[in-house]
Length: 241
Ligand code: CAA
Image (cartoon, rainbow, N blue to C red):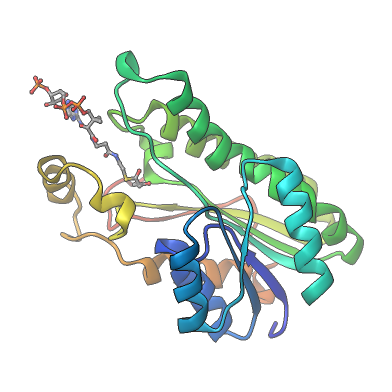
């Protein structure tokens, strides 16, 4: 419904930016969270008119304060898109604890942090829409990504568990599992590796960020109240199950 307040984490760049813009165009009052890049966030707000709030989603207190600030300024958060994520790719035998932990905290603990900070208000209001951005690599695994695959796979389990808790109180919780989308994150994959990956995508190309945003819009709609605990794979046919 137009006017609902939505937070998109990691919402100023890549897939998150496309989600923020799509929600705004559909009439939601969007706040884009971001973690570090002030210059990009400033340009994003100038371009889109969407406010950008900076906090670290891997830090529980920062999420609590961030959600409180958004609620004070715009009202209770009714739509949450947990999109923020990083990669620290390395084979396990070379991976440091820091690379492991950064990905687990930023990609998975962030879902706990953010959901925990909005869930009580959603329960009171008997309405909520949560979409967690997982990954094809959480479904299928990926060489060089034990940290990322574990975090994203965790997101899929988290989604199904919270969906069961929210179902009776009007809160839906779903995941989207994007495949390889044309963003900075994917462009950071070594070109020879990426070439081989794209060759295995039946649609024959990388996805576009707006093709993920389209799925988010579908899942957060008021009319989507019977869709919960599901995972929508948007991957050009790269992984089907
Ligand atoms: N399967 C099997 N073997 C593989 C492989 C694969 N997928 N990828 C690489 N290898 C092999 C290489 O062929 C090489 O073997 P040889 O030495 O026998 O030739 C060996 O592994 C070492 O490969 P590298 O030289 O690449 O080793 P490295 O240590 O420099 O880098 C890596 C390893 C960091 C994993 C690098 O290959 C890499 O970055 N891979 C990309 C991982 C990836 O797909 N990340 C996705 C990021 S995008 C994203 O995560 C978004 C999303 O949700 C989809």
